[in-house]
Image (tube, rainbow over all chains, first blue to last red; front, side, top):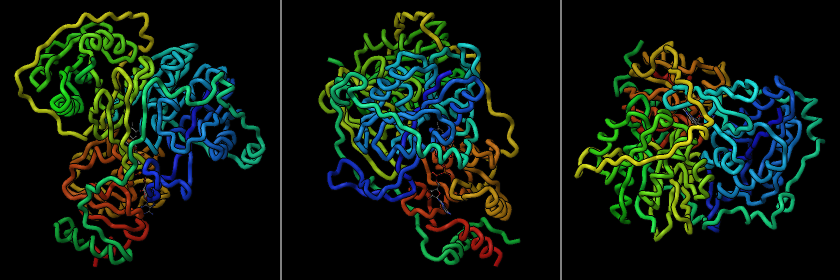
Length: 264
Length: 324
Ligand SMILES: Cc1cc2nc3c(=O)[nH]c(=O)nc-3n(C[C@H](O)[C@H](O)[C@H](O)COP(=O)(O)OP(=O)(O)OC[C@H]3O[C@@H](n4cnc5c(N)ncnc54)[C@H](O)[C@@H]3O)c2cc1C
């Protein structure tokens, strides 16, 4: 079984962000990036399926040069090949275009199954997977928490709200968006990290999919980032800052005042 | 010219899902500002009662696609049914809730019909024949306004709990059956059943005090800090999803969209950022205290009291202060 797993590099979200002078992006020069949360689970699921069923795992991303680091990590964790689609827009807010580009690239790679994460932690669109399935004309299932392959059939648990799981089946070739918690992702063994550092990364450019430029895949409609800004604070919290012993004492007093501490 | 709003209703276990009524509220607002009708598409098998119920809300028409093959949601079935409804209503905006069904259906529809999709929005407005949406990104810390234009219509999904659900009232909408053509052979996904979560070790929804722990705890060994605090306060330990994903605590402890919804008298969030899927499960708690090293963490927007600090230092100090 040949599996393609789509990975995205996202800025570490624990940082404080600033608006770029253009007003249509955040400042990016000071960011550090990591692999998107559920994509790690998608990669692990792909590698486990391959270990069981034989075949190949290809890790693919759409993004600038910096994403090669993430692809190397993926190879160290069991991906056999890596592909970077060289789309250089660091913000990549046009999800339709990104999905379309990714789908065009994937059409060039033999595959039975495509995996993505449920959503990316930075933009939380939850679009790329199911949209790509449309462009690839294959069935899809979103928010997957369990996959069993039975010949050409897939038996799948799909998460609903409140912890309910819907059990569905679909047919290969298919696209699944993988939810966090489906497995316990592995750590990369050191020799594999060393090997991946030297492994080749295939690059796909517009010409490789028969296009003049990536603009060709922007959809037939207009898309524009009007404004990126700091949201008005809804917060009304009383904040305690300073030394831990001081802030803790204030919280302790608060809990006593509100009757949540009865001593003991 | 396409005009107005068409909502795709979501129902489970014979009940209209809450976020659908939130979409009705927003849809009403859109058509009152920009004109056109507010229509609701309802697909299923034996859904007459649901259609009558929806008609009591302030919508203009309920368009019902009734078919054996639409008993459960499938993207293939729903998109075939939606075709006939959209041909009839000709809406400018197709509106859905950003739920797991919304994640599954909206992007597929947008790709298959070559329509722009704005998903997970917190607001939407119509400008001419285009739309402008507001989204929250980067862990809620940044807002983005996006413009879409030049398309016959737009698919929009809105986050749950963004708008208050519509209330019954209005003139009473017209319920109309639409002759939907569904080719069962095109429905590749088969729905085999639904599994409910297993019985919980403790029921966190019944607890007055929940000390919730998130990824900020760093190591499993550190959980003892929140366990001790919960015990001192006569409460239970809850968790964000990364903690249950890692199996540090059982799934039954998870607070949020895919876990439990709690209304505790006291909720203390320890090293939890406050992602919307978590907040959905705790925002209605009585007293909310959050402890986080990041002063821009979105959990502070919902907290009554916030501590900017390291839980590994604050929690031991807090327990010491309580005892003194
Ligand atoms: C379909 C779907 C359903 C979901 N359902 C749920 C759900 O039901 N419940 C849920 O919780 N999530 C759910 N999620 C996941 C959700 O999107 C977030 O990823 C998750 O809530 C983040 O958990 P967290 O806050 O613990 O981790 P993070 O977002 O990583 O935040 C950790 C926080 O800890 C802080 N921190 C780090 N170190 C310290 C320290 N020493 N002291 C103090 N603070 C520290 C950081 O500043 C950060 O704010 C769902 C996601 C999807 C896609």
